[in-house]
Length: 126
Image (cartoon, rainbow, N blue to C red; front, top):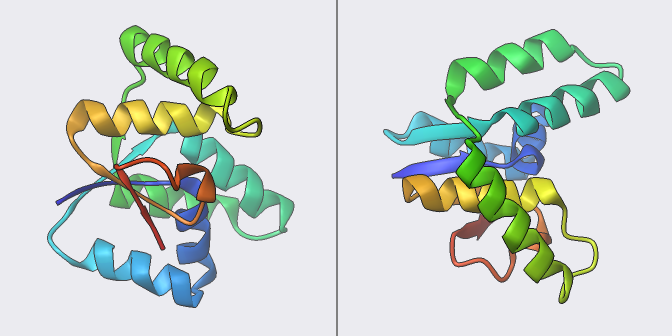
C-alpha cells in the first residue's frame, strides 16, 4: 500500500509514542512511503524547537520515504482546494491541502494524527 506520512505522524514516530508505534508498524511492512518537502521542514522545525536532534530526524525521514515533488499543477490544485475548504474549515492549512492533492496524484493514503483530515477519504487518522 502507498502512504504519505504527515508531519504529525512522523513526530509521534520520532517520539516513540503509542501512536508512533502504529507508524513504525506501517514502516516495517512492505509499504511504499512518501513525503513532501514541506513535511520535512515542519518536522525538522518541531524537533529543533524541542531541542532534540533535528539532523537525526531529517535522516530518518529521507531514509524512510520517497519524496513527492510539488509540481506546478499540484500547487495549483492545492490552492484551489485550500480556497474551497477554507469556507468550511477556517484553520485548514495550505500544507494539509498540498498533502491531499499529492496523495491523490499517486493514489495513496495519508497517515496522520491531524483532525483537519477527518473529512478526507484519503486519510487514516491514527
